[in-house]
Image 1 (cartoon, rainbow, N blue to C red):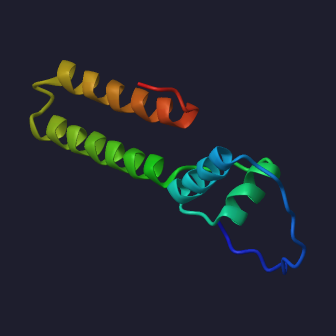
Image 2: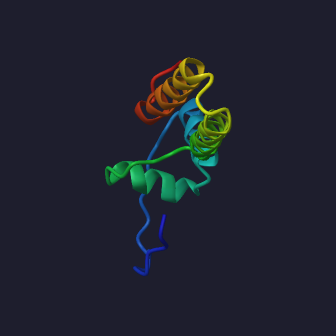
Amino acid sequence: MLKSTTPRRAALNIHVATTERAAVLEQARACGLTVSSYCRSLILGRVVTSRTDLTVVNELRRLGGLAKAMHMASGGTHSEETAAAWRAVTAAIHRIARGTPP
C-alpha cells in the first residue's frame, strides 16, 4: 500500500470486546499492517490482502513456472501430468483470491 501524504490528525475511537480486539490485532499483524491502517482499509472498502496469502500465491506461481520448465525440457513427454499440475496451481491461486478454503 502506498503511503498517504495526507496528515492524519483525527482519531476515531471504537469500543470492542476483548476477543474482538485480539482478532483485529491478529488480522492486522497477518496482513503486515498497523491496526490503524488495517481498520482504515476495511472501513473505506479497500481490499486487504494477507501477507501469508501473497507468500503462498508467489510460491504457487514459482511451482507453476517450474512445472512449465520441466514440461519444456521434457519436450512435452508428461503433458497430461503437467497440465494437471498447472490446473491445480491455478485453482489454488483462485481459491486464495476468493478466500475459499481448500
